[in-house]
Image (cartoon, rainbow, N blue to C red; front, side):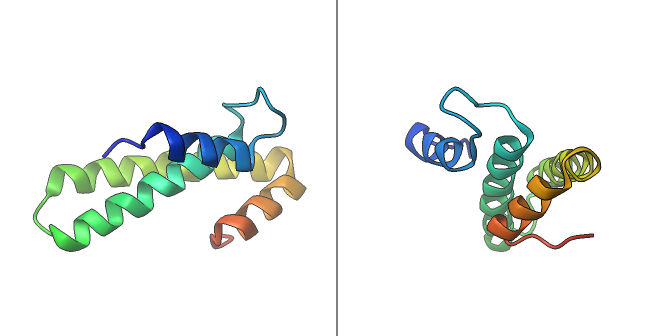
Length: 90
């Protein structure tokens, strides 16, 4: 279920603040969102895979905490990010 290198580089280059940025909140949320969507598709095909479901819940919680941090500290970047990723503002 890991991301391939090319897709990961594409996501990082799209959401990075500069060319050396690989760990900002925006990049982390974008990578987590991609992993969450992949796991969601997997769980639709395999509804009894409970260990993957628990992993999905951990990823969602991690993304939620990163988004709440970004919302508190840099609201304009938060709004731009959720618009690009098509996430709901909660």
